[in-house]
Length: 370
Ligand code: SF4
Image 1 (cartoon, rainbow, N blue to C red):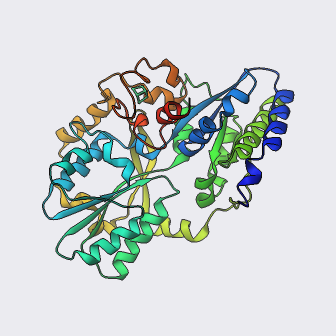
Image 2: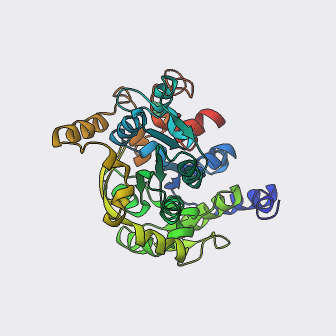
């Protein structure tokens, strides 16, 4: 398949590994941001090909993993309403809230539909005018434009019964939170190509300069990832710290201008809680006031201060039985091998933490491929 096979070519992979071995003179830690990249790294066993000086860390780029407990609990409340059909990506079904998950309440009769696109939820709204259709819109800058397309399409079709329950995140503030952590071990980043395909690369430049950390925009195939690692190492070994785009076949410098314009029209930045990481200032996206009518949070009573505090505390404590170290793994201070539950108490069939449930979760990747 064109644009795929050449980036899985064994000879190309071998030659990149050779080049990496030649350039490395000392230990380095490189973090890939995206869960899709983590899965590719595990699937193609790239870590095993690298010299022992190069360690890969796996960042917080799985939106399912970082969606906080409070937002899951609100989705559960919405789904329990008899006048609501809650639509969601399949990944969300087994993500634990503070007491239960969507699959459990679906089994008890809640009308929850698994969809592949928020645009399918618009059709659902047209087909069920007597119901409120709530799409559980999670994701990073990659998927936010598609959610906003659905919002605008529902408005265009005058579907007053379409709502979004949002859990939307932006990547650069998370990178900054990791880099400003005194315990951080990250020397360089591989930025997620599909996010930059929307946002462009500009938002990363000041981070590379401020924290003296190379950020290399990278794709998802083995040769893409190894090239990203190689370019990151070249910078580190030479003491250069800049944003470099090695995924130019997909990522234009300025990103996707229509998608950016749509996000600017509909969304605004807000402080956002990340499961396992805590609250990161200005790292979330919420609907602008002019779209408030389509914000599903208005279907529920507002959280009072006490309930809001309880939600925050539940996440801070880790409702994953208090023992999941996913936050430390996503911060780069620990690895899956440091978790005593990995593969024993915590498996995809019996997950303790979200990264073992989500198809983009780091623990699921290691369990499946290693
Ligand atoms: S193996 Fe399970 S408990 Fe351990 S960090 Fe991963 S998700 Fe959390």
